[in-house]
Image (cartoon, rainbow, N blue to C red):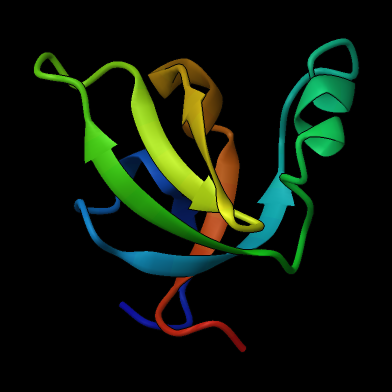
Amino acid sequence: MEGVSTPLSRLPEGSRAVIDRIDLPPDLLPRLLEMGVIGGTPVQVVRFAPLGDPIEIKVRGYHLTLRREEAEHIWVVPGPPR
């Protein structure tokens, strides 16, 4: 699976990846960019809420919670940071 881009929401807990691209509407994109969710940034899936939504990730040294719907549009390349 390493090297193939996949939605962040499909990674298992504890997985590390690098953000490849973000396919969100322009009105939602600035909020994520301000929080450091930018292409080329390493991320780690920390955990999922009991029903799978929201998702907690670690990015740039802090924990961030995203809705599953948002995470579906963040494409990552699984594996160690490049």
